[in-house]
Amino acid sequence: MARCTAPVNGHRTASGAAACPACSSRSRYGSYSYSPSYYPTSYSSSGSIGGGRSSIGGSSSSGRPRWSRAGSSVAYTSAEVRALTPIRESIERRVSVPELRDVFLCHAWDDRRGAAKELHDLLESCGVSVWFSEKDVALGTPLLREIDKGLAKSRVGIVLVTPALLRRLPQEGIADKELSALLARDLLVPIVHDTTYEALREVSPLLGSRSGLDTKEDTMANVAAKLAELVAP
Image (cartoon, rainbow, N blue to C red):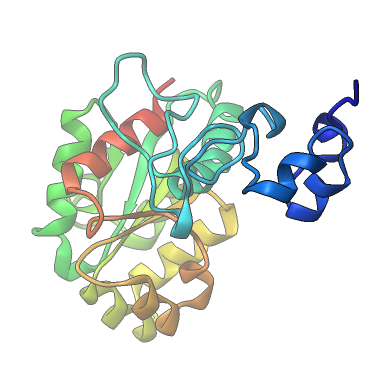
């Protein structure tokens, strides 16, 4: 009895079925259907290898990153996991350094009582220690020196990218100096809020090349929750 060659050669075309000694007679008299057992076991019908969801555009859910807490309800996209994984690895290498703040919050001066304050409060409600100029720079102290110390004593930097920040960066003020230091450390998560990555790339191609989080795709509260999991010991 002729044996089917599909497990070795596959029958993904009509000509392949016709060449098989066991299946050639079937292929002459009707359409040939492929057996699911001949596909790779990790291929899913959604179009991805490994059984995960298709991630066209990086927007689909990808499961939980390894640092996410058990029982967490926070959902991540595959693009977010890819962007945050090297940051998490850098944080883990610095975990033994004492007296570090979890996060340095870089923001535009105009956002200090708006979006930056909102993000700061949400992070602290999640148990994250935040260096925030509004509370950490005392009156009469040299601002740049305090910022320099804050950068040195923080595990990771986040940049709140807003229309106000995009207006400020070309002026090469305080926010620009903070951003330059954070970019040099390669420990930086952009948080895009009320603007787009396209607008950011027009002002700062280097920062715009970094993947991060976007409040257009998520709430500010969920962004804070993701950052809290990212920096958790």
